[in-house]
Length: 298
Ligand SMILES: O=C(O)CCC(=O)C(=O)O
Image 1 (cartoon, rainbow, N blue to C red):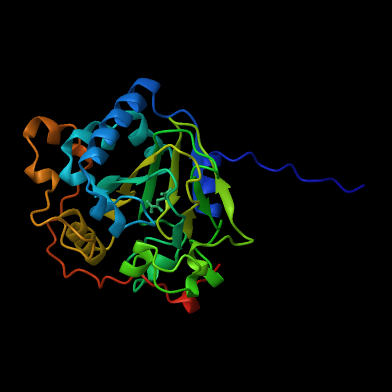
Image 2 (cartoon, helix red, strand yellow):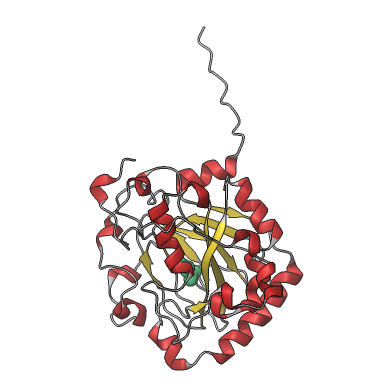
C-alpha cells in the first residue's frame, strides 16, 4: 500500500509567498488612528502640489519624495512595520527612500513596470531579494479606484511585459498615448485590493502597475523602499543605493532635495536605526533598470 508523505508545514508562509510570487499582503499592520493621521497629512501634502507637477506624472498620479517631508518619519520607522520586515527574514533592513503616490479621481492606469536598478549584478537574478517596497494605501482599494495589479513570479522570470518600452520615461509618466499596451490589461494580471491598514510587501523586481481610478475620490499611497539585507549587500550595490538615499540618481528632484540628514534631530532619531550608512567608499555599480532576461534562471 502506498502512503502519501505529509507535507511539512512551512515555518514562514509569508516569506515563502514573497519568495514565490514576489509580493505578499499582510492585513491590519497599521492601526486605524495612524492611518487617519497619515491620510490627513497626505491630503495636506497633495494640497500643496501644483497641477503642473501632477500632470507631469499623470500615470503615477503624484510622485512626492518623502525625504522632502520629514512629517512622515513615524511611518518609515513604524515599529510593527519594521517587525514585519524582520518576520519576512530581513537581516538588516534600511530605508533608502519613498514616495506619496496618489491617484486623483478619474486618474489613468499606472504603466506596467518593475523598479529594480541593479540588473548588471549576478545576485539580481537570485532568490534573495535586494530591495522591497512596502505599500501602504491610506484608503481601501479595489480595481474601481486604482488598486495595485501584479504579474506574480516576474521578479525572477522573463515575461512579455519586460519587453515593452522602458518604463518611467517622461512620455509614459505623462500618459501621452493612452492606447499604449503598457497601460492595458494583461491576461496574467492579478488585482491586489487592500483594506486601509494592510501592508503590501513586494520585491522591487516584480512587474506591477495600477488600475485607473474610476471613482470620485483620491486614492493615496505611501510607497516605502527598504533594503532587507543592507550589511549583506555587495559594497558596489550598497554604494549605488546610498546615491539614491542621498538623492543623487535619475529620479527628478526639486532644486534642493532633502535627505533625512537635513531633518531636525528629533525627527531623524525616529528612524536612526534603519538609516543606511556606508563606510566602504566602493565604486557604485551602474544604474541599470532593464533586466538581461537571458540571465533569469527560474
Ligand atoms: O500607484 C500604485 O498603486 C502603485 C505604485 C507603484 O507602482 C510603485 O510605487 O512602484
